[in-house]
Length: 483
Image (tube, rainbow, N blue to C red):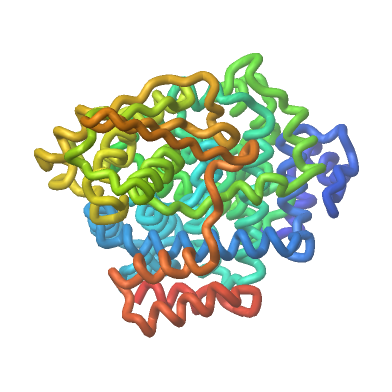
């Protein structure tokens, strides 16, 4: 469907709404009478690179670099190999590249593979305040469709940033009920964010973008019981694939409910439940965009982010006091009550389960004095010394600790000789842990990239992302990381 036909050859209700669409620029919501779906779609359609503050551009490029890095590392993991093999069997029109692989496939297939590989190690960044892994959903979307269109670097940054803003608006409109009852937000809301980003890449109009959100809503799924298995990273790939599919179908004229977010049987009622959301806040959120951008965090450890401050606290105690693992009698750590239902594997048996086990993370911190990629293996989890150390560690629900930011979890180590050490790392409200430096981000990139790329290829990829605004075609980036 051409843009002209999309504007003039649709139901009467749609043509009226298109005519009434308001521009949302410079952080001002021009009209408060927009419905939630229309508000998000309008915001997406009207957005432009020039609307992005410099700190947002910097943050998005950092997330993209980190996503490519962990995607390369994830491509050689078992889940990465399984997904890549599956995608190869599917075949498909060679439109888009698969990270770390020397083949191209249909855009939805590439998005699935790349999303799963970026999230394979649980080393990708995210917004802990929203329990959302943004890059593992948005970057695969932008790359897959960006290759189809020959998207510029500025276009890629724009689509990523405003796809993320769509997700943030949905989070701001609701409490955590959806997450607490078991929905995985990276998979559910991530599908809508992917559809918005995909719509931006493809240049969809307002009507098409609203349809893309409607199509995406019917594909949203993902449950947290699968945390600690290969299906968790599949959630990210699934969300990226479904968002890409929604945008591509909407471009071709497939229709959906135009008010899918606020409708009685729509997304918000189904996933959040009555009384747990306020659709008007979705539009309100768009009047103060990107307030959360400083809370995006590049991970230091390849595990659930809720482990970060406890691990930071314990490692600082270990190094400051020269604590030896054999001296430890027991360790205790109080965490936010909701975290008890996130770090669900107190007695893990696999490396993947270890990523969602505070007990394991603290155990290997004591034994190895570090928590890195090499720690999260099945062999390490089942090492007798690790098993014994896990028995000495207890986490408990502490209602005084916020879910994200503010007062940190207190880690207390008691030694056999009676000495006791405690450490708590506090942060400003909404800030999960201390941000990484640019040097740390680059070091992480190289550590991950070396598992697939030559040093020369890694340097080329780094330079391209650091100067992404100047890149005329995103396919230049993909040529490096998929060779």
